[in-house]
Image 1 (cartoon, rainbow, N blue to C red):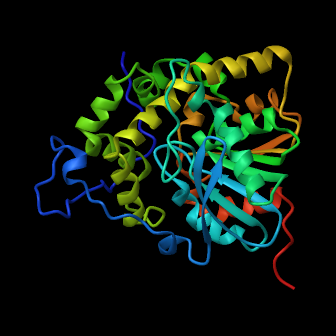
Image 2: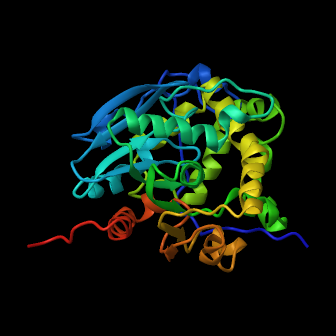
Length: 341
């Protein structure tokens, strides 16, 4: 029997309109008519400094603000650093916050694809972002990553333990664990993992042919239209899907996840390598992880020497759904000073 899994009943559906005067619809090419309005940093990151930092492989885009201990925030798919805007506004009270676009996403450089997908591996991304933080004067720093950004974060903690002082991962388990436990539920809920990992150019062409349909599905699943999803941010994310190089980078990210990232995880597990810094695990009680895994924290305790965490009243997109709670949990974990006199 085939079952359908829904993470939550949604009342809102994303509606997108062209600004060029041409009719919009799922059969129109995104590059021809897609709204091109971009969300500027000042829109949601007022007071933050904007950076385009050259690292070994290219320029990474980031914003920063604050005077406390450094904290690197990493986003997930199909978003950019903009996803952290509400939580970042809380975190700057105690930390020097750096929110960056992952390689291949947003305004960061696009890695050149390779047959082994190594340029889009989380190991390569982690090296790039360690270099970014070093260029900003932060040789040691904490990391909080959601979704794909969480996968970069834990790879960074494994590969560069001297740089990462603490790690928080939002709504993930390790990549090797995801693939090892994949079943019919995974195929129905996380179907895009298998689709985007297919050989090029097929996934790219499918997304390019109907970007609105693909994005609307994700928007419906997370209840886009609520306070955590300002229209200008949704327009920015959606507009990226009209960029052929961005689509390729997104697919390469998932191809790496299905191949080299999984292999690196399995090699670390076989060698007994573990995350040595303190680890905070947060997941959405209305998201997919509770569907797949009975003991999210227990899985991570096999990978980390010091793991703690909890479920929050949110979907997969925790930082948008409950930004104040997300920031509070991160601040408490990282030892922020108490508020008040």
